[in-house]
Length: 292
Ligand code: SF4
Ligand code: SF4
Image (cartoon, rainbow, N blue to C red):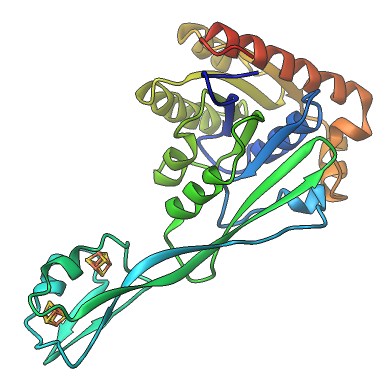
């Protein structure tokens, strides 16, 4: 099952806003995928997939970024480093330069402009990436270090831990900002989860605009679908985006979630719905040019 000559395909699950049930969809889709699959938790500020999978053996390699360190014996306080840094990661005060690693973006520019060679670089831990196995699911979980705000490098590290020969489902952070773009890179398909509210439709439109910009084929899952779906259906039809699954507004789903279980495993009818979603996605990937 390969999207390109070398790598199996990757499906991102995203939503324009939080609280749509995106992670629920990603988890249940992976559980009913019908073949071994990787599930990447790219919501690195609040990873929670393993609360449901309960993988035993997570091995966390560190994600580190190079930040500057200043040798005060060589620093003359010229200020060139601070003038260059747009993030205030290094600031010259008096005759010395101070580094603020939590603000640094690791571009390495300050070391290049330092006229006296006072700046070298050292690794600074910004997160971890863990892996584990639960049935057919190989979990890859990114976790941002507390107090760190640099999300994209940790997501990149998650992507680097994905195996090329297994398909992957990537659970993106909510929204449409840089962390989402970092998740969608190298993905072959974008599954957008929304709810049938005016806010849901508004944020779905933003997410679709992002998919168009990235030239990604996409489909929609409607969660908590009630009767008021006319606007959503009309929009998807006008944009030629398929609605691949509508999940009802069912209290049982919330109850199962609160117990840390997967609705697709507890209720066979939901298991069937997610297995059908997996089959439709594979068809969509084939239509989009992949060869699942
Ligand atoms: S490495 Fe780049 S971001 Fe970090 S302190 Fe230096 S100039 Fe600023
Ligand atoms: S550019 Fe180099 S010498 Fe100048 S303040 Fe920064 S660390 Fe010191």
